[in-house]
Image: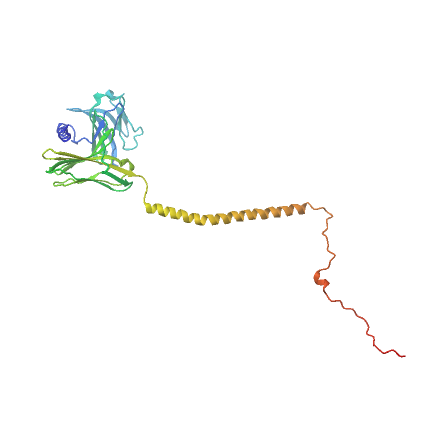
Length: 332
């Protein structure tokens, strides 16, 4: 199937029915499937309504009002429900029980907001195998969370470009990020739940999309499609991987160095503290033993007194007074 021809046909068929003549997401039919409706703005929600779009009209399926609550239309009462039971956020995703081939087709999530007004997202449910595709190994972009990521496509075809589309491809759905009609110099806005920046002007030689402040949820496959005015098509696929956290090697080295310095100071301090603790405990045990021995001495206990005089006293000179006799010679 010629993707771009089918796209233009759908735009014309539903132009009279939908104010937004572009579907934003393609979902694979599944027994238990969910149609995402994530309102990206901070405007106040006054009411929202889900429709199934037929060739001539829109059939109401479910209504939600912040003040009046939820109403599920009778034909869908046992088939659909709002996934977000609290309805506190802007997540108005509609889920299905036991979906069948009868549920293939287009759906619309219409929000009435203040002061923004009407906001609408169109979803196309198709019977298909998995949408997963393989990206070439040389088209792999790696980034850290919080960075701005730029994805670029360079067409190799000759001739004037007419249409450029960007998509995020997942196994169960394809989210259309941008549609640029170069012949008109006009881009159709997407209802993707995050901000996408892109270029769209006549004479482009390449296509660029910017994802500001990426998160881990932005990881996945991205597809860029070109079509020339002569009908030639060219498609490029690339994989984006967003790593959570800071992997800067300088940061790791600084952290390791800081840890080493901390250990260098912590080990001597800890050793000194433990040594003082055990020394104090030892002193306390000695004092406790001496106190215990003193308290348990007998009452008639007397300390032994040494009978030996101090060494210094024993060495003192002793003086004796005696009369002086004259030494006269004996007479004969």
